[in-house]
Length: 430
Image (cartoon, rainbow, N blue to C red; front, side, top):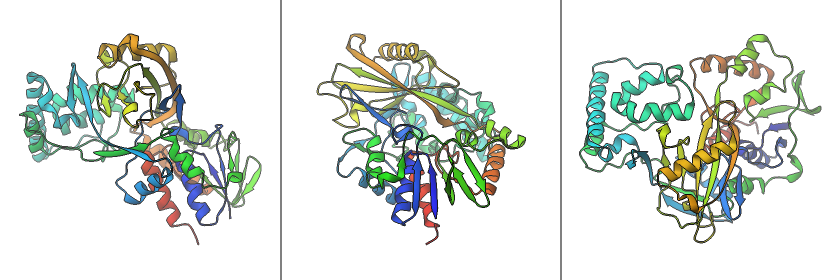
């Protein structure tokens, strides 16, 4: 069987690796000049940056974690204890927010605690779970936490009216602290909360892309076709022509919107379903600093717009001692957007915000560099499930399999992409 793999991000290269181990005749196509997708990294004047924001090595699945670690075994990894927080009115609130209420000003602490307890009581009395995200936040966390954190942070990252978002994605994504832990945290008794990712790893050199490079190194290089965008996928009598070449099977990991462009004229309802798949983009900004790291933080969330356009800032030079030159440090800021964004002005707004919040001194900023990522976050609108059902049904009838974050439209981290490939290959015919 001759297989075409569309897309050379972490999903595509992992799939190629696992199919190669099974002796499958595959060919992988990547539109960009190198592999990696959202996992690409750059080194600029000795400063390492991940183009789509700060990534880490972690997985609840031990097999997945070992697979990732094995891919960078030759390079080595740096282990870190997660130290994340929320920046709130000049203070650092422990993450997750409800486990850090004691770090808030007293009036905010009281409002958050009292309305959290009220929401917990209402749920115990049978208050129905809302189906839009804005109302769900108040139902789950109360109006205090929603007002001070959940609303502004999520409006900042999704660039969407929260009432227009469903709640399908919240399970496993939003920490869920027991009410007793929230009360303890509020009165100053420290609670751990969100043990997931408490320890993580990062490639010692080369950034997160080193994982992709490590996997790709094992592959037959003659089967990897970079700088080769997919122009057409034509199904005919159970086989396929990909860019005019015959294949027995097609597995797509490229964004569904890009796949749609290769399929020719689509039925009207199918085209409408593809068009209805919404997303946000992200610009990642490297800020190189002429100073030693001023803390051992991992990453910080910024919910409020007055602090700057970024929703998260990663202390990327803390992820590995090789991520910045000796005596210097770097930050990675993430700014989400829809449509387009002016890079230079956004970089300036980021620097201004970091200076205003005390994360950088203006005269210590060596340079900034930014990267735009069109497909970054899947927006779970109320019509998403309906649109996905139409798209998946159409592609299933065509015999095209889907994998990956935007290939199958699942809010997956890189480790979950790898896990999905492992499950897929398990059922591959011997």
